[in-house]
Every structure is written in C-alpha cells, then in structure tokens.
Length: 370
Image (cartoon, rainbow, N blue to C red):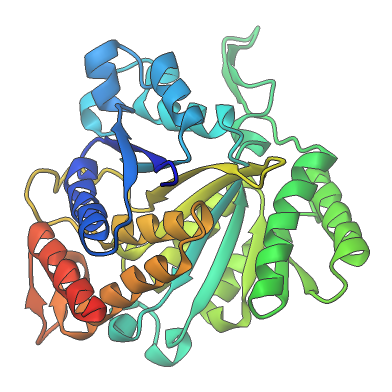
C-alpha cells in the first residue's frame, strides 16, 4: 500500500475551527467511501498559538508544515490580540509560513456559481459564467521589502517606511505559474502593475513580456495598470481569464474580484512553492474570508470556501482531479437546491447553519457517488 499523504491542518482562530470541522467530515467521507486516506496532523497558528505559546507560529509548527505534503489553514486573527506587539500579531504567523515555505504564488479563483448569480452586487449579465484566476506574488514586494519601519525625524515628526522591491527571478517564477494556468485555460494572461509611476512596475512589465515571448508565444499576453484593472473588474469582468500581479496589488484586486461572486465565504485559495526534482511543491490552502470574529462560535459561518480550498488541495498537491471535481460538483448541487448560509441568503432560499451546510455537502457527495 502506498504511504498516505501527510495533511497538516491549522484551524486557527475565529470561524477557522468551525469551518475546518466540516472539512474534516469530507475527509472522513473520502476515507470511508472512496478509500482515500491521509495522515492528518494538527497544529496551532495565529492567536491560538499566541495564547498557548506566546508566539503566532512556533518553530515546531513551522517544521511540521515544511514536512507535510500539504497544509490546510482556516483563519487567523481577531480583536482579542489587537494589543499584541506588531511583530507578534496573529497575522505574522501566516506571513512567516508563506515566507519560510517559499509560497510565492497565490492562486485566487473568482468563480460565480450559477445558483449565486443574483448574489453578486453586479448585474447578472456581467457575472454569469464568470471564471477568473488571479495569481498574486506572495513573498516579495512591499510587504517584505527593506528598509521598513517607523522612525522619528530630527524635527520630531514620524515617518513610516515600506519598500516595494522585486528581483528578476521573483517576477519570472510567479509569471511562469500564471502562464501555465493560462495555457491550460483560455490562453489569455493579463499582467498588472503600475509601470507608469513605479520602477518596480517597469521591471515587472519588461520581465513578463520577455518571458512570454521566449517561452509562451501561444498565450495572449496583455498589460494593464492596477487602477484600471480595478475599474475593469467591476465594469466588464468577463474580459479577464488569468491575471498575474504583485503582492500589494494582488491583495487588493483579489478581494475586489471576490465580491463579484457575492460572498468571501465562497472563495478558496492556494499558495504554491516551486516544484522540486520529483515534482513535489510545498503548498498551503486557505479560504479567503478571514477569521470573522463577529460571528465566531455561532454556527452560522459559511464552510464552503474551506471545503473548496480542500478541493484545490486535492487537485494541485495530490493530483486527485476526480475527487476534487466530485467535491466541487457537490457544492454546486447544494447551492442549486437552495440551501444557503446567512452570507449568501436570498429570498425563497432555505437558510442553514454551518453544520447543516456540512450535512448538505455530505448528502450531495453520497448522491454523486451512488
């Protein structure tokens, strides 16, 4: 028998444990019904790790994440830890995971399910059938550039400094991921930066252009300034297939694109590292929605983004395409049946809790597998 894949679960804070518990049910169903088993381990990250260890991420937890075949994370942060020093805030644990695991490519799909077309804030004709993939560079740029910090000037004023910086290899490696995705989809890639006002943007555009000409002549490459891209996403989103951009702009644009779909509670994400000689790459998967502390513990959070993140994990880390597709179809069927959590509730639909949504997904899997 092959050795089971190691899955490291970091449920985290807020609604993280609640939505992750529904993923565990899907994992158990796969083991029972499809003889798919994982070596599942669990750890702490974010605020819960601060409470237990005084740090948002311990060296031991990082080592477990580095050794795992894939990491599935729930959410981190919350007002409970607002007074914690900046360098020890819950989010620093997630940033360290991304940085030390060298997870440089963040994949954020913006997919509108047919049953949720009316949930979008845009007109149905603009978002029907929408399927965009945003690839965000994740370990460079202004979030990590040096120098950074807050200093006091001789005149007594204070100055905050963050540095936007990219090297050629950082741009090329994330662009390759985006080109490969575009090649497997509709063959269109839009590279986004601010080359009109930023030297890092000029370098970004030049490197992506050169890579496209040298290695991906069959992919239609276009360029767009980040502010125009934001406008186009709410004006005519269907013009996009794959978007590749830097850390800061990717953070903003992916959240904007997420709301085209109607709810952050529906959207998964994947953060990928480079493939080794055996084709294995470190990877972390997480829902986009964050910790949502205002609804934590109320059994009303939407678990579908976390379940869909697990489906992405099966597809990109374990090459289990059929099982991933089965889960995604189950989610589609549940939504088509009219079952809704509060964030995607609409007139005439049946409102349900987190756990009941989990029940519905399991029943849909049973029907599909029968």
